[in-house]
Amino acid sequence: MLAGMASIRGPRSVEARAAVHAVLADPHRLAICDRLALSDLTPSELGEHLGIRSNLLAHHLATLASAGVTATTVSSGDGRRRYVHLRRDVLDGLMPVQQVAPSSVLFVCKHNSARSQLALALWRSRSSIPAESAGIQPAASVHPGAVRVAARHGLDLSDARPRSIQAINAAPALVVTVCDEANEVIEVTRTRLHWSIADPVASGRTRAFEDAFEALSERVAQLCAAVA
Image (tube, rainbow, N blue to C red):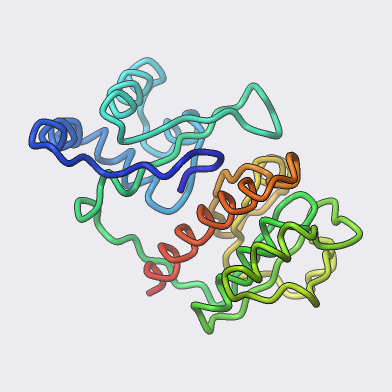
């Protein structure tokens, strides 16, 4: 599910499962996982949310990573920034269900030509809650690779058109940024989640679009399940 990463299977051996349970026995580490259940966050954001000083937070993040519970990626927007992801399939059945209650959702990426369009199509296929997508620098058209990967999975983007976030008339109840650059530049005070998904347009490869689709599909499914 992680951006730009292959699917990771959960631990199978007794030893591996015991290691995960041992890691989560610490209240701080369990709280970190709870915070990452629906949104990727930077270490500084985690520290701010949880009130953990930086050196102690670094220790807990290193421990979680060593057990395969979390992974960290470099931001595609600001290379100095890192995002921490939860490897959810390692924690299948262990994490509480987080709940949100949005009346509307807006998916945002930089160009609104692939990731946010795919997220919107996936959302509409699963939820009746109104949703839209937009970009901070909208492209002229939806990328053909996004149209093709959507079609392979039974979704239709043939009529989709990129548009600017400024064109959204009504303020959405929940904003979901699906690229690092959008997350780092838009100013939203209302409820927001961030999914750090690698840009498939950068390479244009079929595999890149499939990876993005797989990541978004799992994230959308989790968010739908969390809707109160």
